[in-house]
Length: 148
Image 1 (cartoon, rainbow, N blue to C red):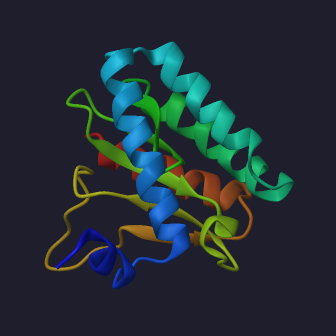
Image 2 (image 1 turned 180 degrees about the horizontal axis):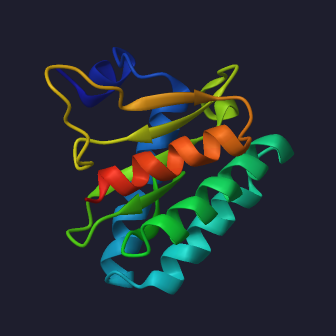
C-alpha cells in the first residue's frame, strides 16, 4: 500500500496531528535544552501567551502553585501545554486550555508519574472554569501528593 493511501486513511483529527507535531518539536528542543530550567520556563510562558485571557490567568495560577508547592518539578511544554516534569523528565502534571480541543472547560491533569494511587481508582484530571481559593488549595494538595 502506498504512503498516500495510508495517509488518506488516517483517523487523526487536524488538532491531534498538530499536537503530535508540537510534541515532536518539543522532544527536539528538550534534547537541546538538556533539562535547562530557564528554557523550560520560557516555553511555558510562551504557551501561556498563546492562550485566551481567562485560560492564561488559570495557567499562570497553576504555574505559581506548582512552582511554590513542588519547586523540584521542571517546567516544560508537553503537546503544546504547560507541564511540569520530575527529575527523570517524566511529566507529572499539566494544564490544558479548553480552547485547545474546543472544550467548555480547562483541565488540570496528572499523569501516571504522579504518586496519587489510592486503592483501585482515583482521579487524574480535573475540569476547571475558574481557580478560586478552594481550588488553589486542592491543586496545591494534589501537586504535593503527586511528588511525595
